[in-house]
Image 1 (cartoon, rainbow, N blue to C red):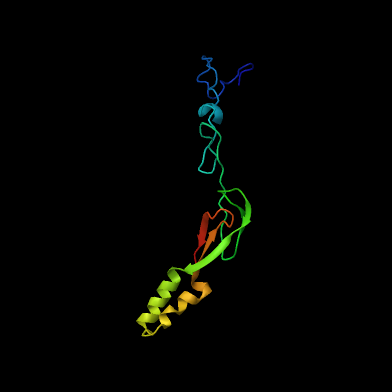
Image 2 (cartoon, rainbow, N blue to C red):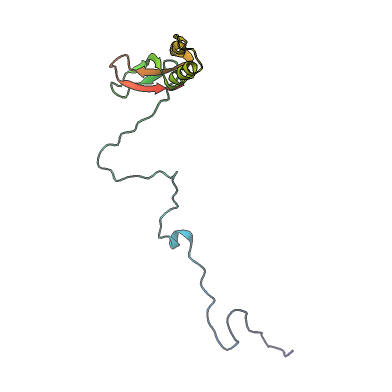
Length: 133
């Protein structure tokens, strides 16, 4: 090999061209134009046309629930009332179809575990929800 001979650099073509190396690819923020990643779980800020209202759903259960009434904004324990629900009616229909038609089919309407629980505000009377069995 001759002294002073330098082999051509790889990727630049032959030894007589002096082209610069290819540029690096753009970064993610440059490629998408400064828009960050988005998913259904990313909070979106809608255009503000006034004060926003934030509501919180408090799950109601079979017992009175401690909460703040969304209507009168009082701190309350909900007033509950039980009423026959879908399970009571289906159970009664099954009992009736099995031949117990002398009033036994009404027994599920008297059992608390077959009843739906309706919640109201004791302060203003607003209906707050239902717990279905």
